[in-house]
Length: 67
Image (cartoon, rainbow, N blue to C red; front, side, top):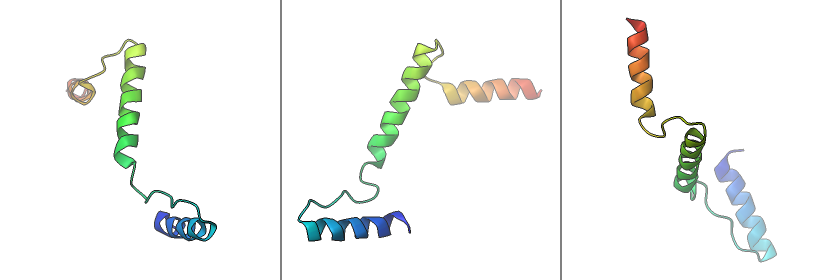
């Protein structure tokens, strides 16, 4: 069963019980991704590491190590 099937079952159950329908799959994906990014950035700051430029810094380290 995928997310769409589960959503359809939950919607049917909610309608038969007179409850509000659940949010559609993917409705809050962007908000969740932003929250995860903010959490990781805060963790990096608490650990004393830079909170930005992670990809560039990692690539630079990897390129210098390979030569």
